[in-house]
Amino acid sequence: MRIWFNKTFSTIDGVFRNLRQSHSTGDITLICTQTYPMATAFLAADENYLEPTDLTAEDYLSWCVNFCQQYKIDLFWPGKEAALISAQHAVFNAMGVQVMSVADYETLSLLHNKAHFYRDLPTSVAKVMDFVAVNNSEAFDRAVVTLSAQHEKLCIKPAVSVFGLGFRILDTARDSITQVLKGVEYQIPLQELRQGMLNTPQFDTLLVMEHLAGYEWSVDCAGRHGELLCAVQRKKMPLAGHGQIIDNNCEIQDMVLRLTQYYRLNGIFNIQFKEGVQGVRLLEINARPSGGFGMACLSGANLAHIALQAIKGAAIPQPSIRYGLKISEINTPVILLDAAY
Image (cartoon, rainbow, N blue to C red; front, top):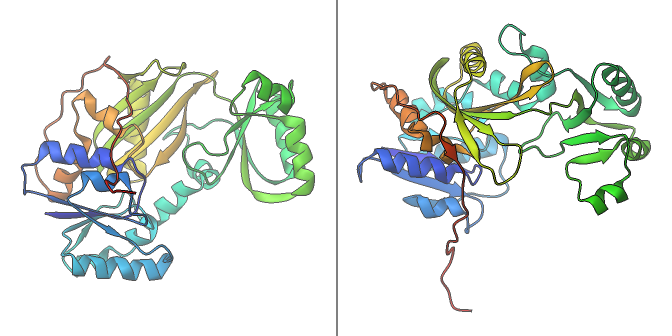
């Protein structure tokens, strides 16, 4: 089977390694494309090719169709333009190409915007933190007043963001120079943020939220169109360098099951939770393998293999997960290019 992974996050090499572990040499051919020649994922792929850097939307879709035809792809596992591609399964199926989409177009578009996602989510499925979505300085000030009356600390995050980019805790006691000198991370002085809004009175949607100060869980999952096949919980330690624990929190497992069913999730995806004063709350659903995917598979569950078996329609035995296992990652130096300069 020839499997193509188009441009996506660098963590996809963890998926490659786990597919390699579960298949005999020659059973699968892993094909990777990226827009730059030094992509580390190329080191784990059987074949690698460069993508054009200037294509988006329909133009990129046409390029993907042509790539599948030219390189005789059997299974397309999209990263870039995953939502758009999910609406075009019929086009690829007509060529004999299966597509591994985490959800349909409407759901993937919803998950991309946390303001829309949080509003859509029934509390019977999972609960999110208290939040207010704002687009201007006046709405921001009202949200801070309202939420401050209910919660000791507040935080902000753009409604559209990945990897926690833009997340900040609102600091009402210190200014930025004090934060710099003290080495404070992921915080922003409230008054200085307000001052910045004078120059940008209207802005893209920002979420003002209660700050969840407890433990965080990252749950790596494999599913089949709403059926949860396997979920591995990684409980993160609050101090850097103290690793993570393969956990078995029943409340989180139940929420993962309901979320998978409600949004008919498929393939490999990641769901994140964090604990606050009122209990565990859902942070987000990532329609892709997480950065810690490789650590999750140390539990004894090869999630990439499970997802691939599911799309083949093969039997899927329940893996034996090693709960309580303490895990971490180490950086490994690699040579990207051996050339004389």
